[in-house]
Image 1 (cartoon, rainbow, N blue to C red):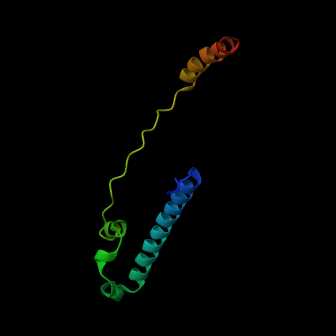
Image 2: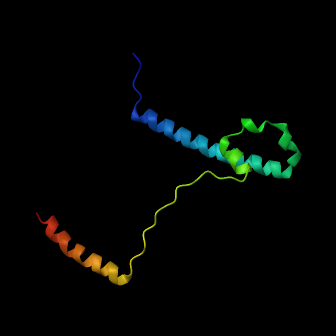
Image 3: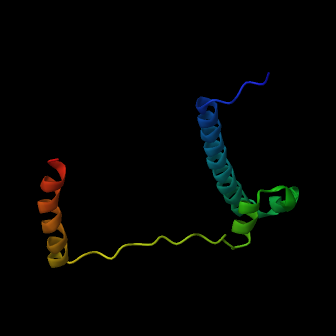
Length: 96
């Protein structure tokens, strides 16, 4: 019978994947620096063997990133108007 993976195994796998991803980014950065120092080495490897993220970065392209939605900051009066009713409602709500 094949043992079922435990949460511990899945967590370790996720951590390993995260570490591998970080290491690939470091290597791509290092390779870019080496190619700037020694541009003639660019012909010493096949570009198709590189990870897609490095090929995009080398071409000056970036994959599309998700934009973060930011909340507008409340003015002091708006914040007070929100906080006061909440402060009075909590004690009533938590009594019972």
